[in-house]
Image 1 (cartoon, rainbow, N blue to C red):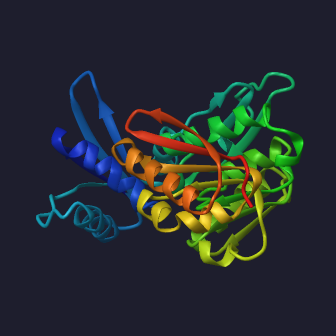
Image 2: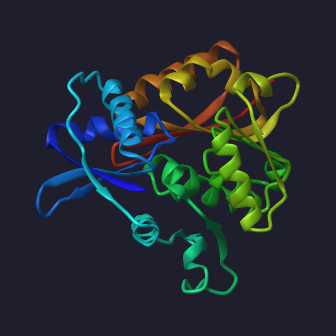
Length: 295
């Protein structure tokens, strides 16, 4: 096992953060040291060649041809485990707690609170990226506000580690389908479900096209890239029941207005009244669409 390290110039930080989100899963973590105004990439790989190939993919996404040289250091198994764990810590929203599995015995969860244990892996993390946090905030908040019938089914598109679907399951949502086109994501999701003795979520390797048809959902979360959301706007809207909820995330704030207007135009074309709420966290945004009179 090796650790790859690369100092990052300030003008590349925002671009790198966006690119890392788009190519998930990956082995990189972007660190910020505000006190010293320095940033760096750090990743863990089996070989230095794996690290170099991964860095090439990342920089080609940014259309940067000249690839900088990585600083490589060898790690023994104990060093690797400790380095891996230091990146992930328990966190919470209200009475719901997301806890790395190695903190299971040391992290005290208050009585009557909810918890989800995760073995995040470098590829998917513990859900503390802004796009996932925004979705989790919505699920936790709406769980206490929406009528019970809207919790009868739930669709998670681009499930990653399974954190959204598993959170919904723990909160009482039923008939949960979680899909991702990456088999590794489904494998990690199923492992996280087993870790929590949760067999209530149907995890499936699939594309969005495979869930279209006559089935309609009361609550749909799509935490994927903005261009894919826009391309599939009509499909996503027609998946929702009459008074259901559609959550769109994975949206850079600079893309939000255009995407919001596109969905509003599509809803109007389909003759559907709706109410839209936009929430922001740092450079990322979420759009919640509440259907009012879908046909």
